[in-house]
Length: 380
Image 1 (cartoon, rainbow, N blue to C red):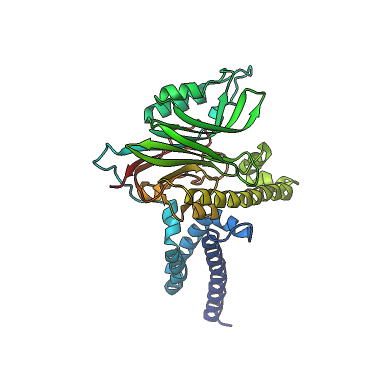
Image 2: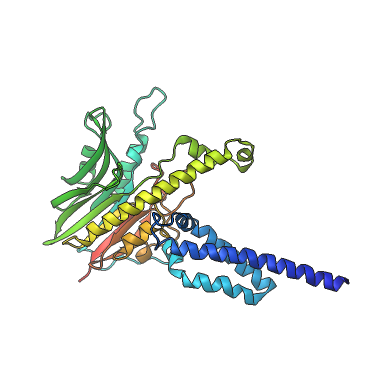
């Protein structure tokens, strides 16, 4: 075999290997698309493809660049499938926002914020309360001054040693609020979810999920300008990672390789992710049904604990508009914890409204979530 034949043979092997890897990347890309439409309770593996979509997308972009250099015609494969799922990309990234309308009278600001119990467990060395995180959150809320504020992982201390509710009613200058606490400890420590409104609340309720977890959703009916709107606040199933899971995720690959518990730790994380996917699917379907039966125009806020390429997101956004897609800018990642960061906090609305100036406020780090706000404008 002469040198030219050897070179051709090597090129053929390399091209075949690259085509094989590209084919795998394309299959994973299609699976990430399907993850939005197939209930994890039917085929849970697809949910993992959905959460990995940003990395799968990036992998296919790399293949396009490689093929442009080596075999330009092969670049069309990944390009074609990326174009098919272009809407998935724009649910993760927006190039331009949308400024607020001139009619500011009918515009109101909505905030959704997982406050992580107002940083309650960040104690001082003597185990006394450390109010620094809580006060940062209060300062941020005062500066933003939302008309409607939805809080997840809300904490209320009825002994008033760690004040939250009274402070927020003063900061937001309102007496209208609705709280729901599925868990109470020591008779004074209440854990749950809350909505504050500057407009009168004429109705409210809680949606107790059928799978009986502490995650929940609530709603209020408010009266503004002689119209009634319904505001939902949802906190869907958390993954419930423990300290050891975060340590494993944070540890270096070199240290993980040395660990005899690598398989056990990774299997535990996968199991928790799977269980959360299954529970969230049921919760999303139950919440979607409740929203579809609302007699009033709807705004949905919440920490869904799921990405835009998920069954949960697709279920809840089928008849609602995602304010980030409508008027956000940039990546919009809202999770600020130790695990990989994704957009999991949302503000949706029906076609009665338009959203403007959606912002993910990454300037505050008092929680493991960034707050999100949007200016909501009633269509004429």
